[in-house]
Amino acid sequence: MKQGLELKLGQHLAMTPQLQQAIRLLQLSTLELRQEVQGMLESNPLLDEENGEEHGGDAEPLSAAGTDTDRQLELEPDTGTALPEDLPVDSQWEDVFDLGSAGAIAQPGADEDLPDFEARNSREQTLQDYLRWQADLTPFSAEDRAIAEMIIDAIDESGYLAGSVEEFADILEVPADRVEAVLQDVQDFDPPGVGARGLGECLSLQLRQIPGEPSQILLARRVVEEHLDLLAKHDYARLGQVLAVNEEDLRGALLLIGSLNPRPGEEIGSVSPEYVIPDVTVRWSGRRLRVELNLEAMPRLRINRRYAEMASGKDAAHRYIQDQLNEARWFIKSLQSRQETILKVATAIVERQREFFLHGPEAMRPMVLRDIAEAVEMHESTISRVTNQKYMTTPRGLFEFKYFFSSHVATDTGGAASATAIRAVILKLVQSEDSRHPLSDAEIAKILSEKGVQIARRTVAKYREGANIPAASQRRRL
Image 1 (cartoon, helix red, strand yellow):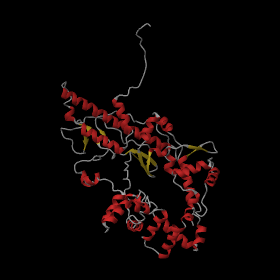
Image 2 (cartoon, one colour):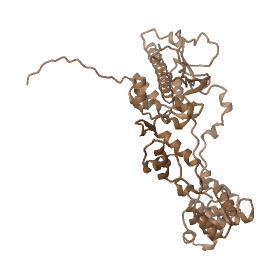
Image 3 (spheres, helix red, strand yellow):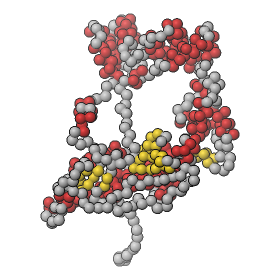
């Protein structure tokens, strides 16, 4: 085998650490990015946060041209203005980058408006914790308290008792009626309905604790204790016959039952809410839509000039400062690139979904990642990262970027209808239907077909379930 040297030309993409950082920052949510920025501020002495005060001699920002972060897209709703071909999203980067108003990250004195450290780091209270606290306030004997502890441990997250009185009596070697008595005490705890052994008992326990017309409450208790199967089937005609009551009295009892909570345990120890900070603001200015970055979402970053002037040297200390300076500049550039990309993608989304902002979800156009990728000349994977956990606040509410993407269904005219628009039409049909005779999936499919949208009954059922709309049998009302 002969050995030799051979030269070849080729191209390949090298994933430098800087490029990896830019990609990673692009897919972070605003809250996650704030944590990233805070970590960088703490680890890199060359990076400072601009507090909006007079610049001192030890931390002046380096001279640079201003960034164009407040670009706007103006759309004429009536004239169909197209998206500008050239958006200046690749402006020259600089050492000073305004990512938002001062104070977005905690500053000295900002903690005065926040809960104390213990409150922010305390463990979430569980249903069992809440019930044990009430048991501590109940004058149980030592034996009854042991029974109450076992009962409380056997209550699931929804508030129902997972086990029988006989099982507890056998384990504790006490009479069953003793366990039953303690269970009734626990069932008097808050939230109402806790410790029930079934849905009927859960609703009955809640009815016992609410004020109201005694005759109406008694009728509602008869329904949930004796005829829960007819209620589940929405067979109101049969229910009225069995109870021998008129429609008005039955309607009052059903309204009372409808106000109850079938899962009382979920009221305690619920998951903490997730806070969302919009990345983009879309608003009307006259008859035009303006798309802007939310400048209050991020802090203002700059290079510390005093440390930067110490970077010229060749010893280890100066090399450290040079490395930190380069890292700070790359971080600022990555942040600027992220913001410009988000604005560019949001602009393309708003331009394509202009009819949504004019007429609502029923006017949503079908759109996939490829459509925006082609409009902004980026790869689909980049669009996927940009639209993940990014939000825009609009005149119609707060939406994740992904909300505007949906599959399509063919129409009689050869066009396509967005799945989001079809769900909105289904919701509108359900809201306007006769509650005595709700529309079936087949009937909804027929109505959509008459509107020119060819859709199968199974697809209607899928969209209906996706919109959290119950089936026709469950929507029937008196």
